[in-house]
Image (cartoon, rainbow, N blue to C red; front, side):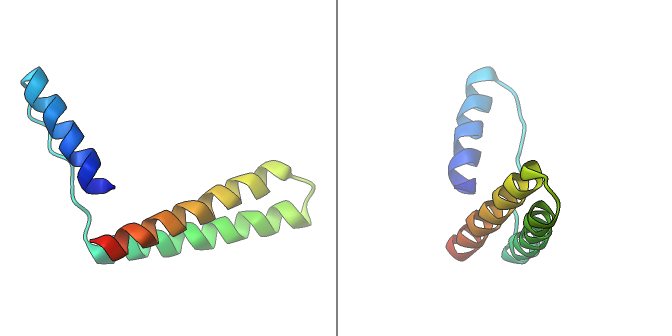
Length: 77
């Protein structure tokens, strides 16, 4: 997914005549981000369960989903 986004941005850069390069994260960076997102997401889900805050639970769920997406992207790289 990251490669596809970078290719689309490169086409846009060529069309507009500008030069902007996006970074390509390494596997280790993706792994650390995935772990961090999972831990924060799990904490927010727990806070959403303990406290009557549904928004914390929703944000935690999004964080966990983000962790899963990053893990899959890490396996592709």
